[in-house]
Each structure stands twice: as structure tokens, then as C-alpha cells.
Length: 358
Ligand SMILES: *Cc1c(COP(=O)(O)O)cnc(C)c1O
Image (tube, rainbow, N blue to C red):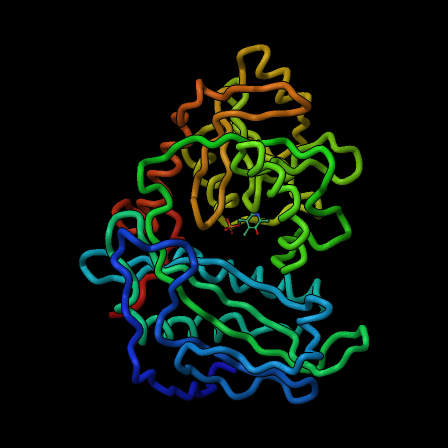
């Protein structure tokens, strides 16, 4: 697939750019998108970069009824000296393929997908904002397009990449958020699709999020689907706690999404010599740590926010405050280091950053 040619149709009507200070998340898109189509038996074909545009789908397309779809989320950063950087992009393409495998969807050529992304970035480079904290959010995704109402894997698919300039997640500085521990609904169970970035996981999470919103909480903390005892994730982020000097995060158990930010934080903490453990973490342990004055820090992690500190947790009517509602030392250091590496202002000792050729 590496020798494949990408056909380019330029967008003659350039979209108007929003000033960086007014950018919201995922509402504005760049001038172009990448598409490739797949047909069972003949593989991927018609690789093209075209003007960003609506899709035409048959009303019986598999994606619309049975949710056969996966996505990825990554970012490109442009520094003042004109260098475009990606953060561990090969990890996103690899995870896309494992999500595809879970949803009985075809594999993409990971190297080619990255080349296609680089070509798209080259064409829409002027859309990458440079103001501190801003970036270009990249959404690769695949949908099942076969016109067929039978419940079976589609025979045709489209793989696409769209891109959206995003403002700083923390316009007014990092602020810890209030989290409601969800004891009724669950996000995923081992054996299900929690490990895959697929639409159904997010559709089924909205109900709990609505309740949290109504009660003045910004996200829910998801517990395991069997005993409602062990912590899984926070909203659509992985979650970490610092308890009595040790950083802990729930181990990947088949229902937790294997976050690239999570993986990077574990590697960074080990590099710094900070004790970090992947293991089961129960809500009861968090409660006891709080009561003993040992719940030092708590934070969510993901590409969008990087680090989202937790200032308060509510579980069965009890309130646990973390670090007096302020951002903790490790949370802040991780945020500064990761965003510094991503934007090229801090040296990258891990070889995580991929710089695009000028
Ligand atoms: C994408 C995602 C994450 C974070 O993954 P990153 O690779 O760090 O962005 C965590 N949990 C869920 C449910 C996700 O969808």
C-alpha cells in the first residue's frame, strides 16, 4: 500500500479561520479531508484528498444501524519556528487496527495511514494554530458503508481523516474538576468493547454524564461492571491517583481503553524515579486514603486535556476532597512536561515526537 498514489482535489473555497481565542473543540474543520474505500475481496482503493464535505450514505448502511465504526484522536502542534510535530502517531494507527479487529473491520496499513496524514497536514498546514496551548485535533475514523440490513460485518468501508483547530483546553489555567462516582450505569465490561474506540461506548455513557451535569459535576468516575467496586476510567479519560507517595492507575483489564497519554505518563514517572503501579484500585481504598489524609492527588489523562486534575469526588453521598481542590505537584509537572515535549519546547528523551519534514 506504500506505493499507492493519493489523488488530490484542491478546495477552491478556503474556509474562514476562527481566531485562536474563539476556538471551541471540534466545531471548525480544515479545508481538506482524506478518504480511502475498502471492498472485501479487493482491499483498499481510491485513496484521495478532497475538499472537506458531507458524505452520501445509503440509509441502510451498516454504520447507521449496527454501529460498526471506530475512531482515533490525536494532535498536531506547530511551533513558532514552523516545525509541525505529532506525538506518538504510530501508537494511534496501531490502536485503530486493534479497535478494527474488535469490530470485525478491515485493517489499515499503519505506515501508509501515517503518510496520508502527513500529506493532508502539508496541504492544510496553515490551519494549525500556534498560540500557546492550541493544536490541530486529528480524527481518523472508519465506517461500514454496505447497504444491507442483515446483522453481519459490512463488505465495504470508508477510512477518513478530518482535522479541526482547537483552542487551549485551559484558557483560564488548569482547574481541578468535581467528579461523581457512578454506581448504577457502567461504561464497559471485560469481553465487551471497552478496549476499542468505538461509537457505542460513548453513546452509552451519555446518560450518566447527563445526571452528573445536572448535579453540578463535570464528569463521572466509572466503576467495574461486575461488582461496582473497582475504578476504571473518568469520563473518556484514564485515571491516576497519588496515594501516600505512590502513583497508581487501574491495570488494563479488558474494559479500560489503553490510552497513549496513560502509557506516556507511566513511562515518564518511571524515568523520574517516581513509584508508579498499575493495579486494581477500589473506591474503598480511595475512601480510606482520604480519611487517613493520604489521598495526595487524582487526575484524568487523555489527548484532549492531557491532564485534568480532580478536586472532589462524590461517592454514595460522601465527599472526598483532593489536595484542597488545588492542582497537585505531580499533576502540574506531568502537564508541563508532556505539553512541552509535544510543542517542542522541552527535549524529548523518549523519541516520542515525529517532526514533519519542512
Ligand atoms: C481516547 C480515550 C482515552 C485516552 O486515550 P489517549 O490515547 O490518551 O488520548 C481514555 N479513555 C477513553 C474511553 C478514550 O476514548
